[in-house]
Image 1 (cartoon, rainbow, N blue to C red):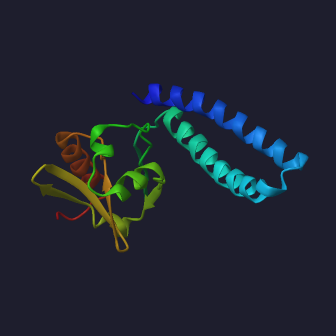
Image 2: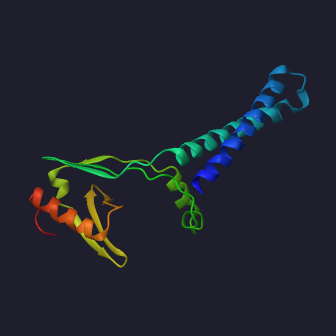
Image 3: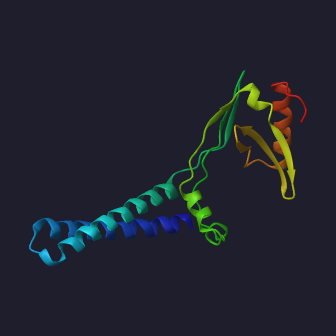
Length: 168
C-alpha cells in the first residue's frame, strides 16, 4: 500500500510541477493584470501543497531504522529508531485526527540517561501487556517499544543488574 501511494504521489508531483511552472511563467510574463493576484495566491498555496507532498513522499520512501540501545557506563544511550511510514486503517480511522498528524511529523528523539535517571526505570504492567518506561523530568518515555513482552522483561532485568539499580 505504501509503495502504491508513493507511486501515485510521484505521478501527482509531475502534474504539480507542470502546473507550478505554467502558472509562474504566466505570472512573470505579465499581461494578466485582472488575475495576477489570484495567481500569486494560487502559487503560494500550490507551493505549500507541493512541499507537503514532497515531505510525505520522503517519509514514505525513507527506509526504517531499528530501535537501539548502547549500554555503557555511566550512561545508557537510546535511539528509538524510525519506522517506515505506513498508511493503514488504524492510523487513518482514528477518532482524533491530530494523532495522524503527530505520526506524520513525529521527531526521532535520541536520548542518553544518567545513572540518576536510570533509577526511574520500571517495567509496568498494563491490560495489553507490559511497558518498559523511564522518567526524564516530567516526561515518561517508553523503551523497547518494538520488543515482545519477554524481551522487555529480559532487558529490564539485564539493565537492572548491569547498572545495579534497586528493585522497583
